[in-house]
Image (cartoon, rainbow, N blue to C red):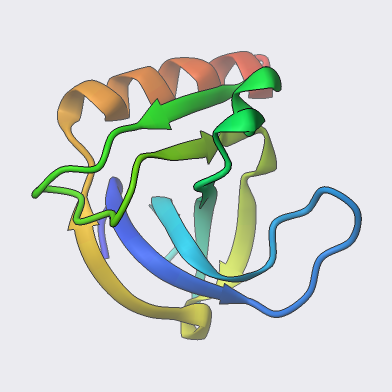
Amino acid sequence: MKKGDVCIVNVATGVGHEQYGERPAILISDTKIGIVIVIPLTSNMEALKFPYTLTIFSDKQNNLSQDSVALIFQIRAVDKSRITKVIGKISTNFQKKIDKILKEVLVL
Protein backbone atom coordinates (compact mmCIF):
# COMPACT_ATOMS: atom_id res chain seq x y z
CA MET A 1 0.00 0.00 0.00
CA LYS A 2 1.18 3.48 -0.84
CA LYS A 3 0.45 7.06 0.14
CA GLY A 4 -2.65 8.28 -1.67
CA ASP A 5 -4.30 4.88 -1.98
CA VAL A 6 -8.05 4.93 -1.40
CA CYS A 7 -8.93 1.91 0.66
CA ILE A 8 -11.85 0.44 2.52
CA VAL A 9 -11.16 0.38 6.24
CA ASN A 10 -13.24 -1.26 8.96
CA VAL A 11 -13.10 0.69 12.21
CA ALA A 12 -15.38 -1.13 14.60
CA THR A 13 -16.26 1.57 17.12
CA GLY A 14 -16.23 5.30 17.62
CA VAL A 15 -17.39 7.83 20.16
CA GLY A 16 -19.10 11.15 19.50
CA HIS A 17 -18.08 12.55 16.11
CA GLU A 18 -15.42 9.88 15.45
CA GLN A 19 -15.86 7.99 12.22
CA TYR A 20 -16.45 4.25 12.51
CA GLY A 21 -17.74 1.28 10.57
CA GLU A 22 -16.67 0.21 7.10
CA ARG A 23 -15.78 3.27 5.06
CA PRO A 24 -13.36 4.59 2.49
CA ALA A 25 -10.18 6.24 3.71
CA ILE A 26 -7.06 7.74 2.18
CA LEU A 27 -3.80 6.13 3.20
CA ILE A 28 -1.19 8.70 4.19
CA SER A 29 1.48 6.43 5.66
CA ASP A 30 2.36 2.75 5.79
CA THR A 31 4.61 2.42 8.82
CA LYS A 32 5.90 -1.03 7.78
CA ILE A 33 5.18 -2.32 11.32
CA GLY A 34 1.61 -3.43 10.70
CA ILE A 35 0.06 0.00 11.30
CA VAL A 36 -1.18 2.42 8.65
CA ILE A 37 -2.24 6.03 9.06
CA VAL A 38 -5.42 7.00 7.25
CA ILE A 39 -7.79 9.89 6.71
CA PRO A 40 -11.42 8.71 6.95
CA LEU A 41 -13.92 9.85 4.33
CA THR A 42 -17.60 10.58 4.69
CA SER A 43 -20.34 11.06 2.10
CA ASN A 44 -22.01 13.59 4.42
CA MET A 45 -21.21 16.85 2.64
CA GLU A 46 -22.33 18.81 5.70
CA ALA A 47 -18.96 17.83 7.21
CA LEU A 48 -17.45 20.59 5.07
CA LYS A 49 -18.57 23.03 7.78
CA PHE A 50 -15.64 21.76 9.88
CA PRO A 51 -12.14 23.11 9.34
CA TYR A 52 -9.46 20.81 7.92
CA THR A 53 -11.74 19.05 5.46
CA LEU A 54 -11.53 18.68 1.69
CA THR A 55 -14.03 17.57 -0.95
CA ILE A 56 -12.83 14.53 -2.88
CA PHE A 57 -14.77 14.24 -6.12
CA SER A 58 -15.48 10.68 -7.25
CA ASP A 59 -13.73 9.67 -10.45
CA LYS A 60 -12.36 6.60 -12.25
CA GLN A 61 -8.98 6.96 -10.55
CA ASN A 62 -10.20 6.92 -6.94
CA ASN A 63 -13.21 4.65 -7.62
CA LEU A 64 -15.32 6.32 -4.94
CA SER A 65 -19.02 5.69 -5.47
CA GLN A 66 -19.87 9.31 -4.61
CA ASP A 67 -18.27 12.64 -3.84
CA SER A 68 -16.85 12.53 -0.32
CA VAL A 69 -15.30 14.70 2.35
CA ALA A 70 -11.81 13.91 3.62
CA LEU A 71 -11.89 14.44 7.39
CA ILE A 72 -8.25 15.40 7.67
CA PHE A 73 -8.63 16.46 11.31
CA GLN A 74 -9.56 12.84 12.11
CA ILE A 75 -6.32 11.17 10.95
CA ARG A 76 -5.86 7.89 12.75
CA ALA A 77 -3.57 4.92 13.03
CA VAL A 78 -5.17 1.53 12.41
CA ASP A 79 -3.89 -2.00 12.20
CA LYS A 80 -3.26 -3.04 8.60
CA SER A 81 -5.72 -5.90 9.04
CA ARG A 82 -8.53 -3.31 9.16
CA ILE A 83 -7.88 -2.50 5.48
CA THR A 84 -10.19 -4.80 3.54
CA LYS A 85 -9.14 -3.64 0.05
CA VAL A 86 -7.58 -0.86 -1.98
CA ILE A 87 -10.08 0.56 -4.46
CA GLY A 88 -8.18 3.41 -6.12
CA LYS A 89 -5.82 6.32 -5.72
CA ILE A 90 -6.31 10.05 -5.30
CA SER A 91 -4.82 12.44 -7.83
CA THR A 92 -1.53 14.24 -7.26
CA ASN A 93 -3.49 17.51 -7.08
CA PHE A 94 -5.64 16.24 -4.19
CA GLN A 95 -2.58 14.76 -2.47
CA LYS A 96 -0.88 18.18 -2.52
CA LYS A 97 -3.98 19.80 -1.02
CA ILE A 98 -4.15 17.13 1.71
CA ASP A 99 -0.45 17.55 2.51
CA LYS A 100 -0.94 21.30 2.91
CA ILE A 101 -3.90 20.84 5.28
CA LEU A 102 -2.01 18.16 7.24
CA LYS A 103 0.79 20.66 7.84
CA GLU A 104 -1.77 23.10 9.25
CA VAL A 105 -3.39 20.45 11.45
CA LEU A 106 -0.09 19.17 12.77
CA VAL A 107 1.45 22.65 12.97
CA LEU A 108 4.52 21.63 10.98
